[in-house]
Image (tube, rainbow over the protein chains, first blue to last red):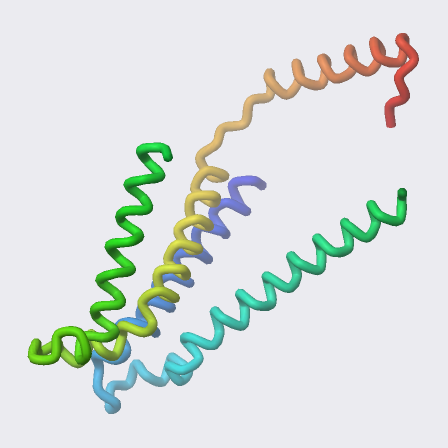
Amino acid sequence: SDRLVGSALLLISVVVFVYYTTWALILPLLDESNSIHSFFPDRVWAVRLPVILLVAGGSLIAAFVASVLNKSKKKK
Amino acid sequence: MGKRAQSILLVFAAGTAAWVLLMLHSVLIPFVPVPQYLDEIAPVLPLWLLVAFGAYSLASIGYALVTFGDCPEAYMSLLKEINEAKTDLKRRGVQID
């Protein structure tokens, strides 16, 4: 089932890349009347979403590091 | 500094300089016409690059997972070696989980 996980990762990364590229780089090219715009949230969120994810991910990592340091300190 | 690190850093610095020039083109090169599309996507480019890099990393991990072959003989010999090491260390009085 390594193959399954691998192919899932591959699929997710391709989908994310295509969607985000279209969202951030291609949408501004098309004018407002184009129907494709209905598939994408407002373009502001193309910046907010990755930033939110980065901050959340960084906080998770920092919390993990803090808990590990705490545990090793308690052992002493 | 290693040769590869230097070339990566050079590409990075050149890209950053080009991006800063694009962002501030109205101030730095006031009479050059720049298509409006570039003006619209310039602020998003670094973030897009980051997302693209993340997608590429994920894809390379996934691809390696799909392509990497299972080696059962190596697994068996590794298990055997682990057991031998365990018995040997126990004999010498070392505690193992």
